[in-house]
Length: 208
Image (tube, rainbow, N blue to C red; front, side, top):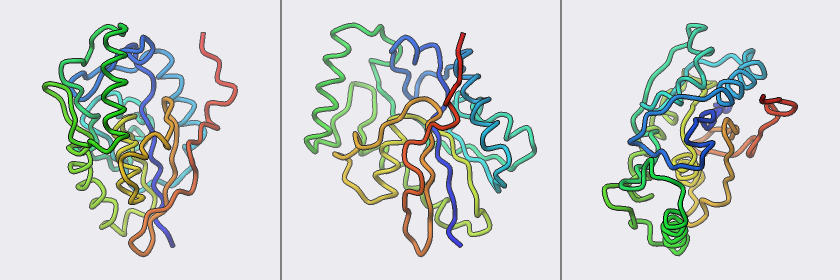
């Protein structure tokens, strides 16, 4: 039987709401919307028999799956799952200069310059390399047949490229809103997509 891996992005934070980049260096909490998204995900998937939970070292990921953790499921933090470090731009206001800088960086990555990075930050190649350790964990624990993994938007895109053996220039093919789900299968040494960009748990969610 194929291993099943539920990979989700964390719920919304106040910086997400304001369009401000967080990155690896900002350890923010979920806001009210993020907590509602987390609850909606829990209510939809609480009966899945997860064997293990993995999160990054940043609290917005484990806050998103806290109710699963509270049900006494085994939980492990993997620093390899942390968000890309955006360096000097982390926490800065969402100005036109910031938007221009990010557009240029994203264009560089799409053009194949995977080592491009902001001052003090990481490149997508750096993140790709550190995500190999979480990939090994998922690949080598047959006793963990059903896994829940919560991580971050940009790192998730890199991770999906790694798992599916796609070039990083195709990162944009993986959209990701807060708490979106990519359900993956793993069998005979290969990862496959079982559910793509699923947000069924958010249908009808009303945020005050």
